[in-house]
Length: 139
Image (cartoon, rainbow, N blue to C red; front, top):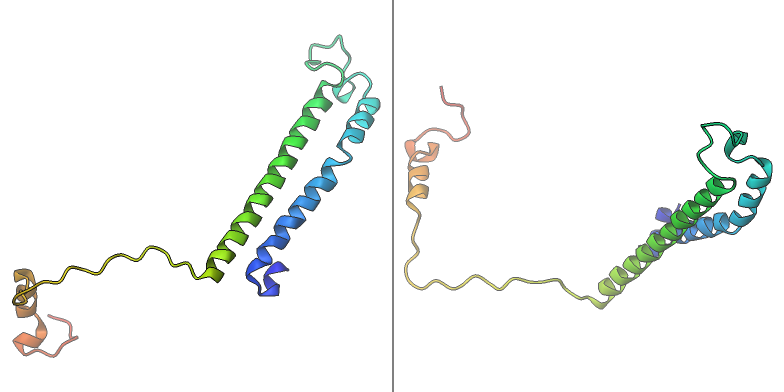
C-alpha cells in the first residue's frame, strides 16, 4: 500500500508498521510467560519430572522463549530504524543534488590517429570491402 503513495519516503511506512507490530508483541510478553507457566505447572507440556524426557526445569522453556522473542523484537526494531535512516539519507542526498564520483576525462593524444592492426584485418574481411551485400548469410 505504501508503494501506491508515489513518494520517495513511502518506504518509511512499512518500517514504522514493523516497529509498531514488534512493540505490540513485546508489551504483553511478561504476562504470556506467567500464563504459560501456570498452564503447565509441571514444566514443558506437562512432562513429569521423573521422566527422562524432562530436560528443562520448570519455567526454563518459558524464559528461553521470552528472551528469544525479545531479541527478535529488538532486532526487528533495529532493522526498521536502520532502513528509515537509509531512506532518509538517500532522499537528503537526492535533494541536495550530491553527485557521485565522476572519473577524469581520458588523456589527450597528440599526433596522427593510429588504427589497430586487428581492426584493419576485420575491416578487410567485411562484406562491404569484398563487394557482398551486408547482412547475408555466407554459404
